[in-house]
Image (cartoon, rainbow, N blue to C red; front, side, top):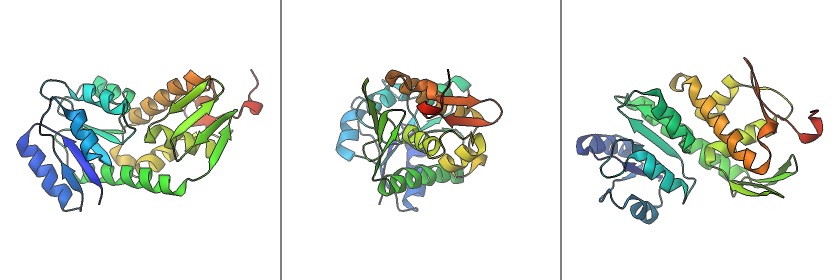
Length: 231
């Protein structure tokens, strides 16, 4: 049974989501003290976290940063605010998806199922190390390292990188990436993928690898193997 931590201060919405998720055999945990979300996160050790943006004391962005400093667990944001910068900020902080309130429960469960299936089935299947552009990619540890250092990537970042490396030196269409990451493109805005890839490229830049993820305008993205790059 997957454990889901729901960081939501609206008691009626929390109870409704918990009841619906329980029907799908998910074990749902709430927050008892919104001053100590990280301590409760550490105690629960959830498989996925759902965070509202507007919370008491500190907002969801703060807690996303704190969680990301401890863990690469999948994170979904909920928000009643409709400003596009909220979604962009969420993705830049390392969230895996964003759900706008009010939402249809089928949309939320579809996103949860897609993320859990992708992250945990993928982790179980990936056992080998892979090299790319002189770096070692460790799927089990969700890390990439070279002579400049080592990075721990989020599950989303690692999955995107894996798909691109699988087809290195070939264009992977935006449609294929969206379908492989979220299963059903109907529930994903095009901007979600853009922000995720840009975040991955920025992080890889710390190891001098950002330039090897290329955007092919109107087509998709390509992971370039160093030997094939002609600058």
